[in-house]
Length: 118
Image (cartoon, rainbow, N blue to C red; front, side, top):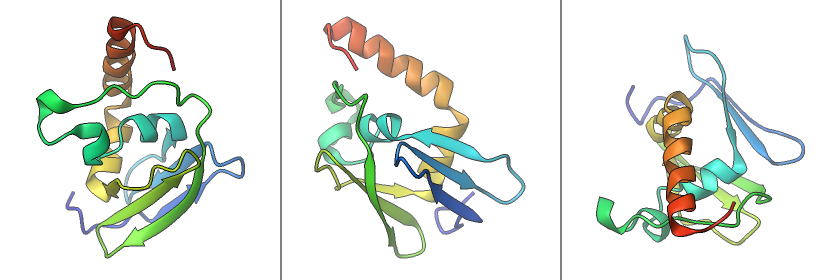
C-alpha cells in the first residue's frame, strides 16, 4: 500500500471515540481515539528518533473532534485535548489497525514501566 491510496470509507463514531477505515479488499479497521492519540505520528509523541518516543498517559477518555484531509495521502485528527499536529498517512493508519495488538501491548508495557496510567 502506498500513502496515496485512500481508504474506501472513513467513519467517525457518533460518540467520537472510534474511527473506522475500510481499505479495498480488507476487513474494516476500527481504531480507538485513545490509541490514535497515544500513537500520533507527531514529533510531540514520536520525537525525532525512536529513542525520543514519548509515553503519553491519561488519554483514556480523549475524543476526536475533527478530521481534515491533507492532500491525497493523510488525515489530520483533531483531539479534544488540543492535540492536532500529527498527520496520519493512510499507510500509518492501516499499520496501526493491522498491528494493533502488538503496538497497544507495547504501549501498555511502557506505561507500566513508567508507573503511569491510561
